Length: 68
Image 1 (cartoon, rainbow, N blue to C red):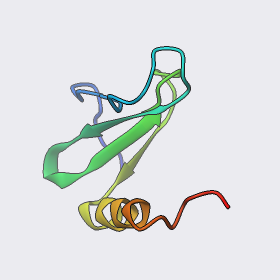
Image 2: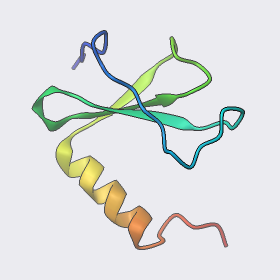
Image 3: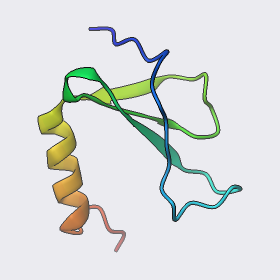
């Protein structure tokens, strides 16, 4: 499946500084969420379904991805 990202409005966290390596996200049609590397704006992006994004966000809130 291919998703048109040409009109996406990308944003990054307000906690992100201008020199930090981070990701940008975009809310897309149909509830999809795009994620890309903020330092490589023309590079590839991942696109997640609403369920996949909700599962990821829940995992973040619950600390499942915290480094030990």
